[in-house]
Length: 94
Image 1 (tube, helix red, strand yellow):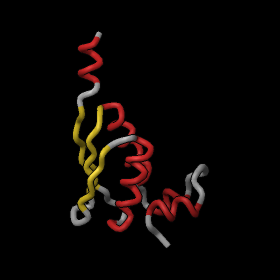
Image 2 (cartoon, rainbow, N blue to C red):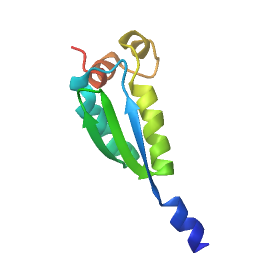
Image 3 (tube, helix red, strand yellow):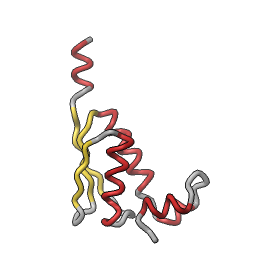
Image 4 (cartoon, rainbow, N blue to C red):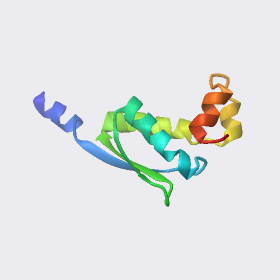
């Protein structure tokens, strides 16, 4: 049983490329990933990527968050559970 716990704790590194999130919003996205998913995150503004390093389960949470956050502004605003203010601030829009 100890072996299974050790293997599940191995970190994986994942790079996420953002297509709809502006580069200036990446620090905010990184903070969300660190706070909610508990991952280590590094930003490459020029490539518009965030690389995370975490156990597989936390990396999966980060992947879900990235998918939810990297949406065109119109799609985000159409979600019934997202307020206009929080969506705009998350995506870096005025």
